[in-house]
Length: 493
Image (cartoon, rainbow, N blue to C red; front, side, top):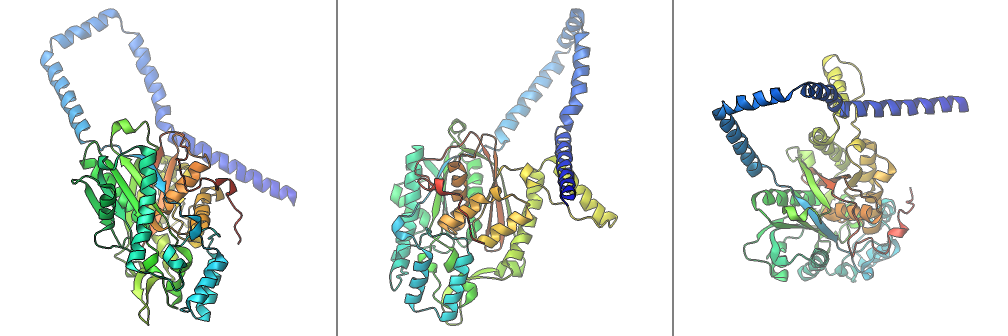
């Protein structure tokens, strides 16, 4: 029995090395082909005498017009290239909001609070307890101050206070860490799905920090947990137009006014998963900022499945039968998320995967389509394209599904699971808490590639790809400061 097991392990090991050899060969095929070509050029050049070189010079002198035209063409072409090329976008730094310990919600306290509210029936309380136990959330996630009151006080004023606390807390840390003055920022993008007061959240920030009058400000609402990547994409596009500028992206969500006080199961899930959190990100297109920046933005790929009715309705804010408002999550959510991910990576794959993986995928696709060969579709190995994965911490099921579908290892989803455990689902800002986790663990090395994946209502799947410009260390006041030594923790099944 042991002999068969060892034989099987040896076959798996040999197959692994065969695949690595194939990947190396295909990736460096062009370089290998250039070696004999370069050798031939060197041999030929070594045979040239001084007289041959002199004759070539005389030939150019007698064809001055040709030389001038060629030089002008090269000069104009270079000018056009440098004027029209896309500007690099750098992530100088970012900051995540760390809620005070007084806002922590332990599981027992959460359930006692729900019972004392008096708005949930016994069936709903059992359901909440069951979901919370399986959610992957730990004992240190935080809820806004208004939800700690009995009865809760989900007023407009309390919602504003929560949002100000989160946004200003993250921005204060960001400005302190980067030494950038608020008046130096030319672009501001804020995203928050369910709380969009007047004046807007972006106006609240401009007023608080007395930012300049010609700032280009945007407020994104109703775009779900993937809106953080959308905000980065918008900031990137603005930085292509406005030279030598800073852009700030603020991603948050409001819990105070979006707690559900009814008994519809599909609308009770967000109560168990969503917690307070937010992040502020400083982007720059200034070449001088490259040296101090942490990352460079490589790609943003956005997929919208809103044309499909099931996808459009799977995450929806609505009223239940008795008129209580909440966010309803469909049973089809994971299926729709899988379909959206497939569409997204179909676009992203050719941009990031090595040619060896693309060939394998193309060959199996052609074999199945043209000759009806019953070959299992080849799933590209994204571990060859990225060293780190920031999967939106939307819930335990989301992380499990992506780990399985992308064939990732436990270490690749560790940041997502630990972020869910420590902070809960902080909506669009969760991918930044995950990136901060990797930095706090000292895993981010120069040249490493990071894939941020987020899902949101609509239904959307969005990806951002970053390149580490140095060995990245955690910034001051990191959300994991003081607790990273306790992670990873063992999660119950």
